[in-house]
Length: 498
Ligand code: NAD
Image 1 (cartoon, helix red, strand yellow):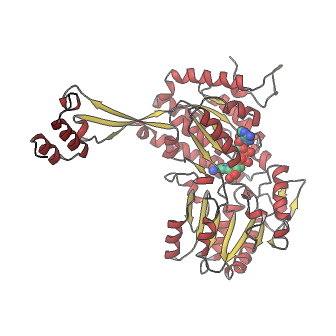
Image 2: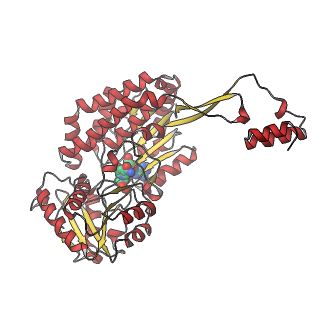
Image 3: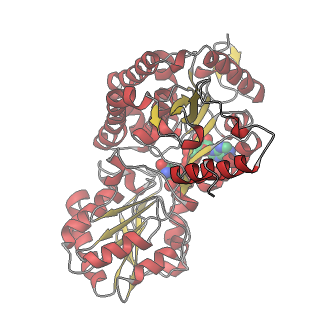
């Protein structure tokens, strides 16, 4: 048997044989997994729990290797890896292990008088064979979190990690081969060609994390087979800062959500700040002080900041910074080291809306501030763009907070902090509009990979002639009353009073 789960990039050596992961190989892989899924093994609670535990074990036993892989891919600080990649994944597994039995129980629901006598339930069933395509910025969490959701829901899974984080990708392939039941769970490493080959196949769900351009490619491929998708995309997540708040706490929380999350390379990272013209200089001062407290006088040397993932992304971010429209706008930072792919935390004040930096998701350590006369104007500024993945607001003003929650549409909102909504497993995590579709985390992960099957049970009793021809006026009256659902209406119809 060819085990594609361990095959790396197209053309990579595997023993003495060169194996290319093309459409034929992808088709073979899906066929194999479909046959395995057909055995019904993944449906049992025991199989699901054993695989969730195995994946948890793979991560716990190899935490040091995960830290090393992320250091190699992104110079990610170990604390960030342990908290946001390993810790969050462990939490997901613990929630599943605690709740899965309960999630799997069919839900009894009421029936209507028109089906009397009957009973009904919603039976959660696995979708089948699913594909997870993940991104480079949190390469472990963004791969394993959807995978463990798919397993909990009883599916067979293929994971395609991001080629932009090669050490993490290869570690994932090794760990899944070693720890997991490979009859049902595989990894295919690779880039565009391999993903294209996978996307040509018929899946029962595709869960994609990444940018909207590729999101469109994924959805187009899925449409061909009527395959449902979850698209976890990004966007420009704004932070609104009101005056008359504790600016120091706000600044520290913005720093933690921006530079403390992979140096701004995170989907829910604060993308830009909106504040009033009065508040902006005070906010910049506090940000400067707090940034220096966190990363010292020479942040390019700080061990607590990830590097930029690749020279392409370094060039993209440099272009945003070199745009004429923002020249002279740097209020703090701006230092770069191209050889080491490092960019210091950078704050830009009063950038124009038509600058390059305001035209795309920044996904890096640059933080522009735009100013308005009144903080309430921020709602229109946000709503004039695409719906973001997250929107943050720092305020003590109850009325403004309510206005914001009511009028700003985003994947998620957070009041007086950044990013933390991500760790609350009772909240769905996902985008809206350009920031994506579908959601996961906690029970939402289980639901994302589950079909809720409607089942109605009847017996042979109560076989009223009402529904059968020949149709009569009495039957029509009774049917109308039944559809209306009112007992009185049915009695009236029976006695010919309606
Ligand atoms: P990426 O480059 O790792 O690409 C994501 C995946 O798409 C990879 O597995 C890659 O192989 C595949 N891919 C790339 N080009 C393809 C093509 N032409 N055809 C088929 N597959 C292709 O990651 P990225 O897109 O640079 O990730 C950054 C983006 O992802 C940002 O917009 C960010 O906001 C978003 N993101 C969202 C979330 C979320 O949870 N919502 C999380 C992380 C990142």
